[in-house]
Every structure is written in C-alpha cells, then in structure tokens.
Image 1 (cartoon, rainbow, N blue to C red):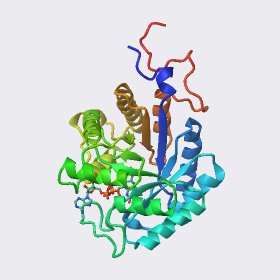
Image 2: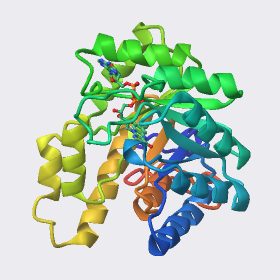
Image 3: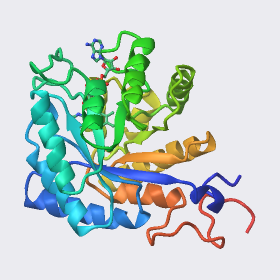
Image 4: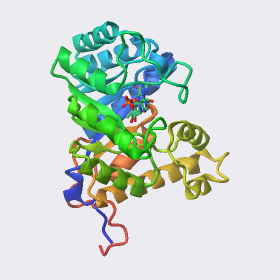
Length: 309
Ligand code: FAD
C-alpha cells in the first residue's frame, strides 16, 4: 500500500536538526559538511547543544554564531542551568542574542559528576528548566523549546510528576517540546495522550536518533531511561564488523519509525544528527523531502514501491 510519504503528506513535514559543537578542526569540517548537506531540506531550525555539566559556552557560541553569519538557517542554542548563578546564565543568553540567536532550547542539564547523580542547583542559580524558561522570557521575546521524556525522566517518580514539570515549562513560556530519543512509537503516542490530558497543547516533537553506533546508543539509552527493545538489538546482531550494512539497517529502521509516526499524524521531526548527514539525509528523502529545497513532485512517489505503476 502507498504510505504517507506521498507528496501531499511530504509538503506538511517539518524537520529540525541537532548538532554538537566541534572539539577540533576535523570535527569542525565534518560538522560543516553535514550542515551544508542538510540545509537544503529547509529545517525549521538547527540546534546546537550545550556542554554537559555546564561546561564552557564558547564552542556553542562559536557554532551558532557561524551558522547565523554564514547561512540562512535559524540557529537555536541549547542552554543549561548547571554550575552558574542566574546572572551568569542570563549573560550567556544575551551573548547568544548578540550573535543572532532568537531561539533557545532551555534545559536544566545534568550535574558535572554525570547523569544519574543528584542535581544540586548552583547557589543563586536556576533550579530547573522551568525557572530558566521564565528567566529567558524576562530577557527578550525568545522562541523557547524544552525537553520532554516519553519514558519519563529518570529522576521523575512517576508520569504525573514528570508531566507536571513539562507543564511548568510550558506555562513559563516554552512553545515546543522536543523528546528524548525513543524506539517504541506506542510509548510516544501514550505519552502525548497523557500530556494532552494534562492540558498541554504545544507540539511534542519526536526526537529521532538514527543508530550510527549500536553499542554507544545502548549505553546512552541506559543512562537516560530510553528502552532498547530486544528486536532492535537483534537487527544489529552480527554486523559489528560491517559498517555499510549497519548504515543501511539504521536508515531502514529510522525510516520505518518516522513513516509510522507520519501515519499516526506526526508531521514535525527533530533529528539527532550526531554531526553526520548521511543517515538523516536518506531518512528525510524517504519522508518525501527533497534536498533541492522542494518536496516530492507528483511524478515521484517515494514509498509507493509495490504499487501499480
Ligand atoms: P527539567 O525539566 O528541569 O527536569 C527534568 C525532570 O526531572 C522533570 O520531568 C522532573 O520530573 C524531574 N525533576 C527535576 N527536578 C526534580 C526534583 N528536584 N525532584 C524530582 N524530580 C525532579 N543536556 C546538556 O547538558 N546539554 C544539552 O545541550 C542538552 N540538550 C538536550 C536536548 C533534548 C531535546 C533533551 C531531551 C535533553 C537534552 N539534554 C542536554 C539533557 C538534559 O539536560 C537532561 O535530561 C537533564 O537531566 C534534565 O533537563 P530538563 O531540562 O529536562 O530538566
């Protein structure tokens, strides 16, 4: 059967791409190749993460600054509350603004000791992302996105607590939530239902992580509370020494996930690119987007494979 990557659906699909700031010249080249390759999909925004543990702002600042100066893309800067008093965080936000940033992904962040250790706000610092959203709102009329957790945040005792925190962030002025990555679309759908029942109506944009490296993703998932279904591991089993097939499997799986989400009515996707364009490029193409800035023409029907010509 024809799937929802038909042209009509493709024209409604919106995407955004997440990158991390490079640590050296080679990584910088890789990042810019990826940005250049993905830019023609005309993302709503491209976001740049903030150093874990509240580490230095400079790599993020330099990256968003260059995106702002050298491209027509809208940069969004991630910003965390970790390890700094409010005035310092506010100062960083103003610096981002001065290089052209109008959109923040506002986060609490994790303690410098790492995910899982107890979070203690800096004395005089923002205690959580909701306070940071309110602080940013006080500085300017920024667009603000926040994080959401379809499998709940590991620190949340239950879904009610978790969704209450999301509600606080939205009430403080955030207009979009981007989810932690997940692999089970039923989990996402149940979460969105819970969120709507709690009176939250902003887009809950699924964060899609193509599996570039199964071992790395599994380790990260364990830390952040994302479940890794058994069928997922089985699909990568035996491909440890076969990067080419791994990439094909990763694209096939992520394409399966996003096309199923489209069928469930989702039309907005955030991709964790890991600064690599190839898999995300292929997935966007399968979603019906075209890297020449357009969407599928009527003569080209991706996803209609198997349908009568
Ligand atoms: P909050 O929304 O403030 O809280 C998260 C959850 O923790 C809440 O749901 C709440 O239930 C629970 N909680 C918080 N405080 C308490 C408490 N005192 N008692 C009980 N429960 C509590 N990290 C980075 O360092 N840099 C980044 O660039 C970055 N980007 C991210 C982008 C996305 C889309 C996502 C999903 C995560 C990102 N993170 C990043 C990770 C994020 O910082 C962590 O997940 C962090 O642990 C929580 O941040 P938050 O903004 O969700 O926090």
